[in-house]
Image 1 (cartoon, rainbow, N blue to C red):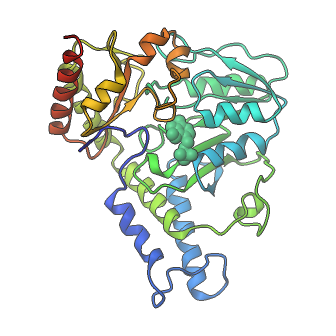
Image 2 (cartoon, rainbow, N blue to C red):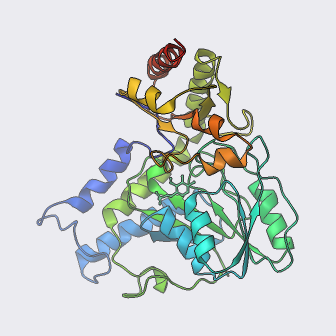
Image 3 (cartoon, rainbow, N blue to C red):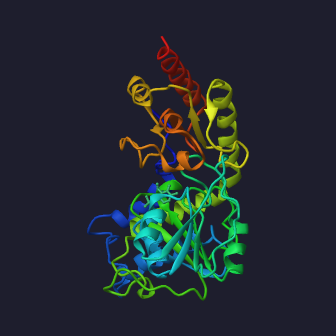
Length: 358
Ligand code: PLP
């Protein structure tokens, strides 16, 4: 099996797994202790959480704090619903975590259009806009958004700027100027089930989850030292390996593009994270392709929309006809992908797609 679905989730880095193990240990070692308990094992677990908080914060600008959540989806819900916006502006290519939460918030929501290259250029904001959300890197087509310019535009309009940095964190520099940034461990080689919201100093949010008052009252519930230690280790590793990981992805990108010359790229080639190759081929039956390539783990359009039968909202937002959107596939690769993986996968995909024509 060749894994080419790095936007859906990344493999757990061995270093992150190692960092988790002490907090999953049996009764003797007491790694299981509640990090909110005042006794010694509890304090040790709490200390590990604070180390991880620093490691995650190091991916973000100074002048803010990291609140751990159960996922980036929860972080985004906290950012939007905890702010209770009256008028929000959100990009058309946001993840459902942003789109659906903004819709559920009761705010008036304006959609910011993307161009044919998959870029959401800065646009005038309606008077009264109090929250703007534009993601750093799109999860379906990998396009990198002008988030620093959006932060400036939001502030000029008197709004806060929320950046979903799930696909960019640990790969690119932190989104400049954002007030709220959402991250997910499992997209940067950490474990599933833990995310974070970075909150700029001075930005107030109301909690969504009430109870024991953990995370300074903003997110009640016992934290998981194992998941958080894994998140921290993955973040630290991503920071150290950022240039190396990017160079690896560049090599794989060039190789894959050279092996699939008859496919059309969805979204900009240049303003893009090159670990995302979203391609289409006219008339391609993607379901048949996926069934013919069962030993490749890749995605049709977006992992979230896969299987729904609905064309992706992102591909539609960049102007693709439904038929083109439905004949698109997403290959995602990263740190642990080899050149041989790319060669084998591209050969199989190419052969299966070509066979559909006869
Ligand atoms: N935002 C983006 C851009 C994503 O790709 C995802 C996951 O697919 C999420 C948010 C949600 O992240 P999580 O799985 O941590 O809830």
